Length: 129
Image (cartoon, rainbow, N blue to C red; front, side, top):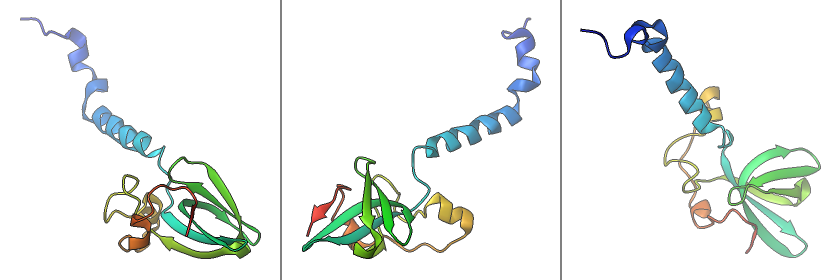
């Protein structure tokens, strides 16, 4: 009786190593759209108003702090001197409970559970306090 796939069923390309390569690529491609930095709650003052923004801090130098907002993935630039607080937070839907950001896993850095303050601010847009 002939095999249904003929020579393809004996091809080494359809073996176990290909399965693992496809599985690794699947996982890597699934993480490409998620930032590898932790979600933070950034508090800053603009004039006399207090603001909060939830997102990933992309850079923080002496002059500017750049945050990619979690809600719309837009950028917010804040003068570094106006930043009053930065706290790690848990943003529902962006990070599973108890799961450290991938970059922290790779660096073997410790991770603590999310803050309650970020759970109450899920929009990712600047909000007045």
